[in-house]
Length: 104
Image (cartoon, rainbow, N blue to C red; front, side, top):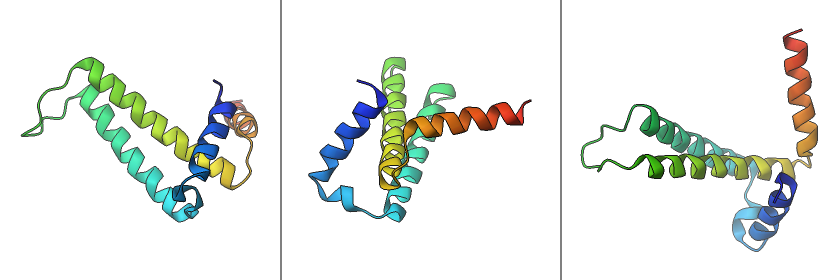
């Protein structure tokens, strides 16, 4: 499955649920929450959690958690693209163009 196929699957999936109709402000809150969860996942992989009451997790568990949090962020990103009718390919070109121009 490529990115565009996943985006269409995601939108179709959530159109069957209330969450699809949430405003961009609510979606931004979800994205912010997911970034916090990504931060915790990276910390756990890099330096550990060192949190009383939490048992030490395996490296495999921590890597899977990192993938899950990255996927959650990707999904929120894809929602924003759909909401504002922005093509993913256009964003990729804009990113590449911006970096090339910045580092000429």
